[in-house]
Length: 121
Image 1 (cartoon, helix red, strand yellow):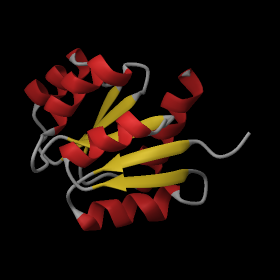
Image 2 (cartoon, rainbow, N blue to C red):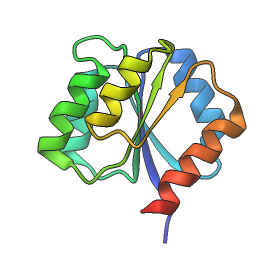
Image 3 (cartoon, rainbow, N blue to C red):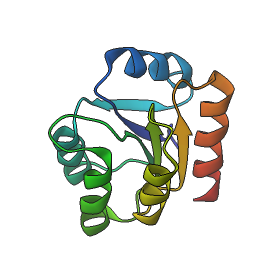
Image 4 (cartoon, rainbow, N blue to C red):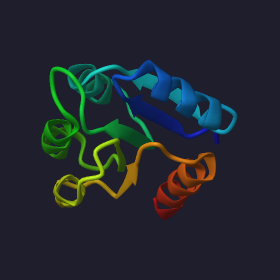
């Protein structure tokens, strides 16, 4: 079995680079810069996990989650956000996200969250 494929959807290049440094040794990574690109990739490919930013151009993370339920409801989603809003977290989980991680995050925090979700599959 090959490495699990993870889609990282975040409009901030620095966040994509950080996640790449943390995860690229253990996982195969794809990247999306906005909500539309995220949905396009999810429609055409299969991923073990999506790391999804809430605040993105074109479509925000909550709208991506809403549409994802209709398209590919089996893909687990971890929501990342700099906005440490309990309301957004609740909304994301209600829409099907498995968990919620505030930015900035620690390396171990990301690794543990990703492993936890992938192990539950």
